[in-house]
Length: 73
Image (cartoon, rainbow, N blue to C red):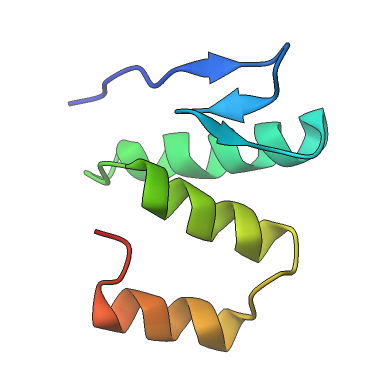
């Protein structure tokens, strides 16, 4: 089941998580939305992790380690 998540394009936030620009916000929202159809339930921490990956602040290896450790919960 899909549930709506709060996106504030004016303040560049997604579930309260701040983004540097509209492109990063929309990329993250699109990625999260696609995964929500598969059962993913985002929270602020998981959005921060995805944002940081999209912005290049963490590597794919970091992302995999976070996922394996379930540090996004």
